[in-house]
Image (tube, rainbow, N blue to C red):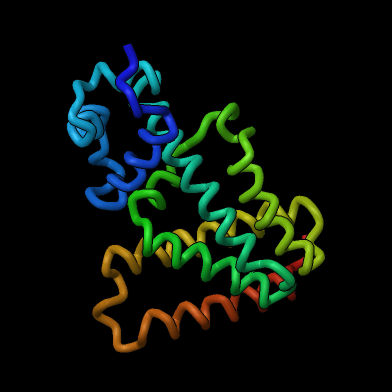
Length: 189
């Protein structure tokens, strides 16, 4: 029998909040159940297993980031759009480290076909259309942007830039300048 008040959505939000608090890798069905004062078995009528819960958190995070990025991108193009998108990405990761970690899990094709993942990919490609990149260059540029954003944010959050004299924000700004220059002068195939 389902416990009153528990839903898949409520469990997903609670798991996402917990991920931000204790780390995504530490969120388990048992830990989540303890937070609700129930036995782990009570959660299985709402989520199939721990993997489904992880995917739900990843999709929630992608949706939240897509909403934030869409608001930041409104009315912008070119470098302004690139910077707005990048800053939305970086700010989200810093504010929600557990949710950000969830977004990095590999999603199967069924999960990738769900709105949040598609919306995120479409926004990235919309930015690149401003640079007039055709395929397959656009795919290469998407990978470059994601690798750069993820690498920078991951190193920054891990403390990788603390021992250098230059502020991380200044380097971030220059990194975005460099990305804009590369995208504006994409090498021919």
